[in-house]
Amino acid sequence: MDDLKIIESCLLGNIQIFSRLIDNYKSMVYNLAYRMSNNPHEAEDISQEAFLRAYQSLAHFNP
Image 1 (cartoon, rainbow, N blue to C red):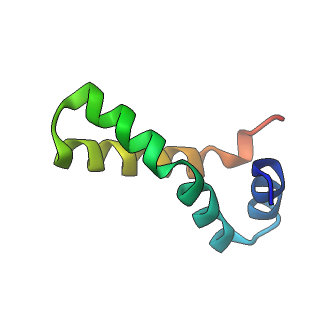
Image 2: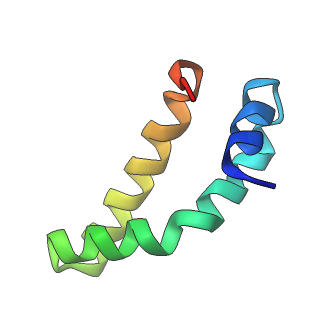
């Protein structure tokens, strides 16, 4: 399932499917956060915050 279909499904109420987006991007987000912070714990916190904000902003997504 591509990212757009996952987002559309989330917007229709299937919030569990958001975990697929996390699985698709967690390595990339974590690696970027780690390069920025040079701290594994900080990188985890940054990654979690990024995914939380992405989820909270889904309603404003415009493909």
